[in-house]
Each structure stands twice: as C-alpha cells, then as structure tokens.
Amino acid sequence: MSMLDKFRHAAQEAGKKASEAGRRFQQTATEATRQLQTSAKSANINLPIPDENATEELNKAANILREFVEKEENVGNFDNIIPSEIFRKAEGLVIYSMVKAGFIVSARGGSGVAVVKNAEGQWSAPVFIATGGMGFGALAGADLSEIVLLLMTKEAVAATLEKEGSVTFGGGLSVSAGPVGVGGEVGMSTAAMMSENPELIYAYTRSKGLFAGVSVDGTALYPRKEFNAAFYGRAISAAEITRTVPAPSEAASLYQVIEMGVGREL
Image 1 (tube, rainbow, N blue to C red):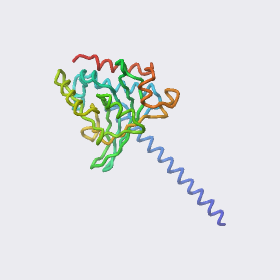
Image 2: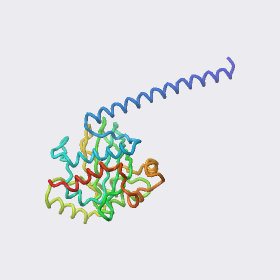
Image 3: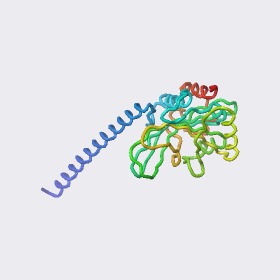
Image 4: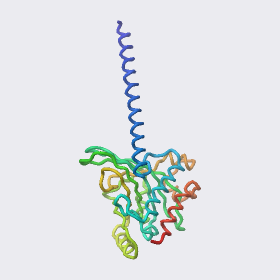
C-alpha cells in the first residue's frame, strides 16, 4: 500500500469514527432532552430549554408566574405565594425556569422573560432572557426550578436589565428570599430593606430534585439578543424594549397573570 493509500485509509477510518462519535453524541443529547422533558412534566415544572417560539416562551412565563399567584397552599414544602403588596411595589419581574446538574462541579442554565413597570404603571414589552452559571460542591443529580425575581426598585431594574452584557447575581448584586404572609408587616419589612438596599431583589422559587433550597447566587442573566431582534424586527437593547416598545398581543396571557398578582386580595 502506497503512502497516499495509507493516508486515504487513515482519513476514511477517522471519518467513520467521527461520524460514529457524532451519532452517539446526538443520541445522548436526544435522550438527555427526553429525560429532562419527562422530569419536568412529572414535577409540573416548565421545561427550562429555551424555546424558539416567542409565544411559547411568553406562555411558559405566564404558567410559571401563575404557580406563584394562584395556589394558596404549600407546594413542595415552599410557601410560594407572592404577597400582593409586594407585587404592587415591584418595579420589574424576571420569570424563568432553570436546570442545574453536575457532580462536584455543577452547571445551570435556563430561559425566560423580563418585564418592567413604566411611568404610567403599565408593564413593558417583554425582554427574552437566558441564564447560566457554574457552581462547586459535593452535589450529584439534577434539579429543575422555576424562579420569579421581583425587582423592587428602579435601581434594581437598571442593575439587572440596563447594563451591557450579562449580570451575575451574588456579590455586588444580591438577591434575598421573598417575604411571605399578608398584612402591613410585609410592607414595612420591605420598605426597611429597600432603604438599606437600593437594588433590592426578591426571589420566589419552586424546585424538584436533589438540590435542597434554590439559590440564584452565581447565576448569570443576559438578554437573548438574536431572539429579541427576531421578535421585534431589529437589533434592540433590553432598555429600549422596556422603555419604547408597545406591549405585544403575544404577551396578553402574561399580563393577565401579573394583574392577578397585583389585584389579588388574600
């Protein structure tokens, strides 16, 4: 066999192995997605994989938020109902689902939307967002979570949605567990925290998996620039979306659930 023939043979074998590796990777990815879909369905949690259909992403956000507005009982040992008084004070909402998995080193990722209250008290057009991050610790398995962040001040909105690139929670931009309950005590507690922390962000979570207690620390949040551009018809920043774009009809279900939370009397 000539040197050229040997080279051709080696290239063909390498190509076969690469094709087989690609096929196996595709099978593994497909199976992982199927298992994630099954786990999400059994846990009654919306799939955290970013959807390429804007209406589906908006409906997912509405479904997630509904879990924190409608149910009057503990779900998965979390008293997850957002007090209406807290809802009324919020200047912005970030709603997303997330998957976290790993052993020793964990990775997380998800997708959702953010909306901001304008000067007239109306809710803005949605910003489509994605999340990601890394963590460390003796962890094993996977966790599916749904998270609602309430941006309680305009400063919190600016810090979360109006900067270039991504923002990472924890450290300089802290997130606190959202208060539960009813009555004036909740409002007074929030007012005190807002005076101490101008960038106050509250988190409400639902989780199913092996990670006890969901923390958003270490999670990076960033706008899905290409997806937002496709939905709004041009390249557009998160700040421009929330300040200048009329609320789209596709987000009607989300706005309805927001109004349920704002207007609900417990």
